[in-house]
Image (tube, rainbow, N blue to C red; front, side, top):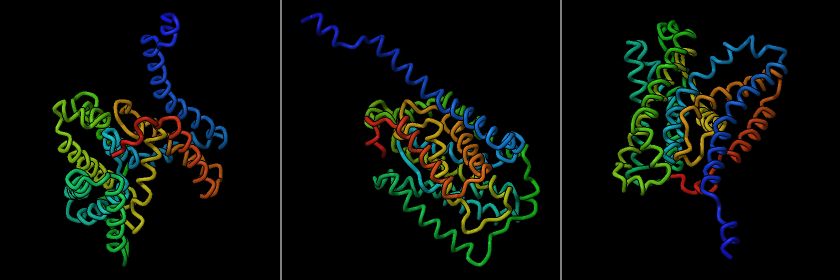
Amino acid sequence: MTDIAMKGMKDPEQEQRSLRRKRLIRTLLPIAGLVMVFILFNILTNGNMMKRLPLVMGQVYVTMIASMGVFFIMTMGGLDFSQGSILGLSAIVVCTLSHISIPLAIVGGMATGAAIGAVNAYFYVNRKIKSFIVTICTMFLFRGLIKYLTTNSPVAGSPDLVAIDSTAFKVTCTAVVVLIGFGLFCCTKFGTYLKAIGAGEKAAMFSGIRTDRMKFMIYVLAGAITGFAAFISAIKVGSVTSSGGAQLETQILIALVLGGMPISGGAMARFENFIVGSLLFVILNSGLTMIGLSTQMLQLIEGVVFLIFVAIFADRKAIHVIK
């Protein structure tokens, strides 16, 4: 009986090795997918993917910056579907204030994003409404406001706004934002607190983390980050229409999942998730467009890929705790 019982028991060391192996696979799979997708589309487009790489990468800056804020939110187990509306409304403020001063326009865009994030945080933290319900409601609310503000004509920015548009400037801004985020998440208690809340909010609270204040701050921070992404978007286009920021929340969610982000957050979240995911999403989207697929077929393929990655990275034991 003892031998049978011992055989039935799992070796702790073997279990740890298996867990480390799974984590390594989860880390390397998105990176391998990024390389494979890039090579595949470069072959299918007869090298056009490589030739148009600067143009392709021009689409990644806004997605990557905005994804970082949502990455923080998802790490603590929340969701945010209002990012597109935040970007659209913040871009309107950026374009309007750009006629006065570019620095003021940046501050105004970030303040607008932070204010909308605070609205989300109030209902989520103080009124205890689920994050996905709150942010879906504010998504429609502020999308309606964007359409109202752009009814007669697009909101145009000043010529100075478009004049600063350059690849070097956008790469520098994106790198600075990502490096600041990396420092916060990986080199301070900020990232540890987020993972702790995502893994178990009650346990995090008993360990001394002020969870409500942390959650409120994260939504405000994510809104401010998207407000800055609105500035990057505005200098590229120079104006905002009623469709400003449309579908951004979907792009962010797909990018994060493609990057290996666990839907329920927690300890398995890694900072590179949103970086790899943003690159993979843009290359996948651009590659499918280059080979001449229709919009419907493009969305179908993206949906299939999205489902595959969700099936791989979703934690079925923790998925029910999305807040």
